Image (cartoon, rainbow, N blue to C red; front, side, top):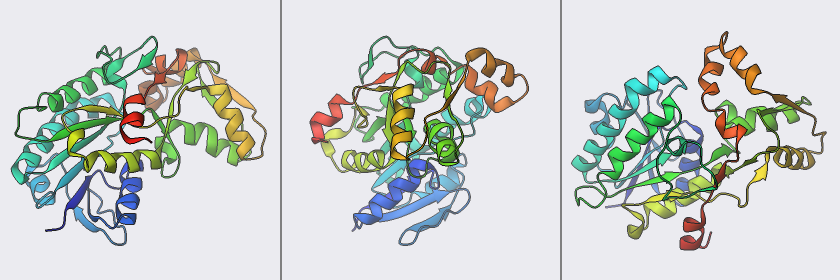
Length: 292
């Protein structure tokens, strides 16, 4: 029977890129979303993965389940939903005997001096980081038990195709420069910051999913090293787009003030440490393992 690759969270930046890459490799693909996302060549299923009955039906016969879901950037939503999503997905993957690949971020590490690696301890300094640490541990607790083959794949800040308004480098830098506007930078333009290219995530997630030796581990997906400063990233982008690299820096106090009036910006404020201090995401382990 042909392997079936199911994407939970179809329609998001990673889900879209992953679907494209799987189909380009002639894989059998199922897209699961609440809105019924459709892509030519893939099966489309409507399901709310917070509802276990809908979830288990949506992953039937899956060989690999990619959990790439993105939730509204709201602590209340995260606190109500993330743990339930992870527990539901772990249970469902076991029930259908599928492998689980969880696409994760770096919030659980908190503020790190030096490089973030797969062995960096969890030390969240934000409420959202505490939730991400909790859900990561739920999957890591399954490592080596023999009931589930699972892995966690992490990326730095995303940019590139399908990023849109969900990816800070896209809407603050690339899209502004394309429109002839000033690029925007949070807090400090001279700190180092790692960026992961979305198509690289898709290709590397498939490499991991298809490698039996990759499971029961955490992986950092391939990311340019050493990181650029925000200033260098903006200048390089402007050069590629043949435009001026004029930049507006949004200082921490400005973000805090705006957060009093605009809730989504208030949600961003607790994460500003990622812009105020060096953010160095290291993917050496993956690069060496897959010669990427």
